[in-house]
Length: 400
Ligand code: UVW
Image (cartoon, rainbow, N blue to C red; front, side, top):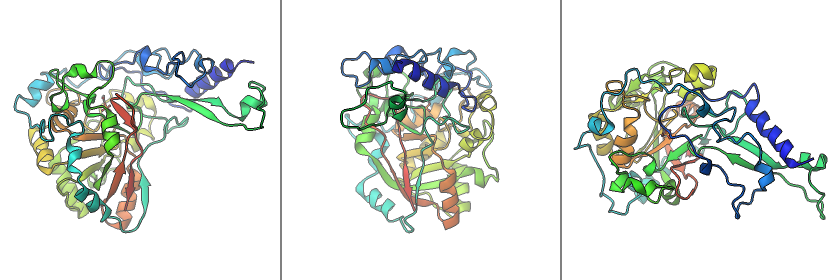
């Protein structure tokens, strides 16, 4: 028996399991559907993967893959079509940090996290209790990976395990060693992740003024590898917006801004300080786990921060290095007044260089903070050094 049939069955089984909730039947104009070259290339001469191992019909990044949302129709609908462009919304004099850390900078506001800030974060450690913030990758149950519409869910494939030997699919080894190996195919933004600063742009320029053609083929500037190389360590603060509003989670499309953050922080007895890493809990991933996918993705419209000039100025004045949320895309999906999609990605990330961290599991951290009566801590994270990539999975660690 060849490995191929077993692997095909395994992948199709994982993708087709009734309990595994497929992602939405929607495909927005953003993100851009992947192409064949985004997939692992088993024919690549340096690929350590056996081509036979991956030659199955259900390539998880193939639009025809059963769990792939790209094969279907309706994009998420803004309540109204956009009435203006992102450039017009933000304006020609939008707050900007371009040039602030020199013409070669690729990590933006993470530069605010100096060694003083690292020590300030360390000083927050009192109890030694730890929480990790990543959601599981490749879950087969109701916790199956949430993704922005248009992205496929992760598919993990076993390449070797004891079953292969027991079924006689691979020859016995001379020394009796057996092992497990596996591969994963997923969008790099398909789980808890850091966006690269070069992930989003407009007017042909990305963070720090780099030409958008530096993204052609791979990000030669501002890839996630720059953030990964640096690492992110500092004082983190958690604003529990859901708790502040007396709900388990915010509602579809429910928005807030910096004034709401300040109000919630005051209720928590927390002062947001300059250069704090800002974590915001909306409860949205908790909601994801309680409803069928069809309900979650129907007229996809996340709650979250919404654009205003004053909000962007607040981020700039407060020198916020990193915004971390429990939503798929950090901000509400469509700016309510104009219908522009995800404008804070440009206003904060492209223009100010603020790092965005999405899909963090904040429930357990919120409970710990509540139990300890304090909402500040040491935050540490390092995405993977994926060369040229627009984002990377990450498992941030918090210590109280
Ligand atoms: C999009 O790019 C749509 O979102 P994210 O920032 O989640 O990757």
